[in-house]
Image (cartoon, rainbow, N blue to C red):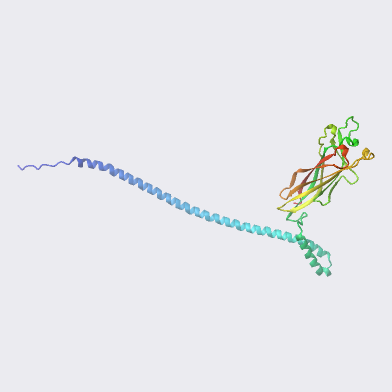
Length: 307
């Protein structure tokens, strides 16, 4: 019999290598699948970013277009407002010239034209041709709001002590005449008149001499106009007299006088300048006021009109 060839068995290392390669391949395939998924996700994100960028670019273009349209509209509105203002100013300048031309006979019309043009030049040179119709101005009425006594006269003027029937008079009545003007024009308000006075009652020195009650006046002192967009400070000048009447006149007492100034600032953006501006006036000139001059406090406010 022929001898059998011995068979060589596989080495243990070869038998163990095959089972170990299978988990590695499975892990590589899983990793490869995960990489593909991540890659697909990144590509999707890139596409979304590209679309968002395009959308943002379109929005930017639309926004720029809207802004351009707004600027154009603002320019058109400004031109319209300026045209209306120029038309109103031209009409206000031409109206006096037209009236003057209508009042002159036709035979003198040619000679009237230069005078009308000269009148327009004069009106343009003035500070504020306001009244109540000029579009570039506003007007305020200055009101004398109220008045009260703040200090009585001394005890040497018995007729001013008021309650003479009481053992100790407690009221001092100041017989007052007032004149108020604006900006040193000497045109303003006279209260109550040239031939009379009005009484302002204040606690006497025996009663402590404190301020009395407010007496409402609410009368217009004058009207002031100013250009829009500006402010104007108006000077208030007050002159007052405490007139000695009754028993004081025969015994030689002299009238007491006083003056005071104040100011109020006007602004076209404000419809009313309130609370009132106080101005105190002491009758410390002329007579001696019974040993102590009387004093009053006045209040003024401004109200916008013709707007």
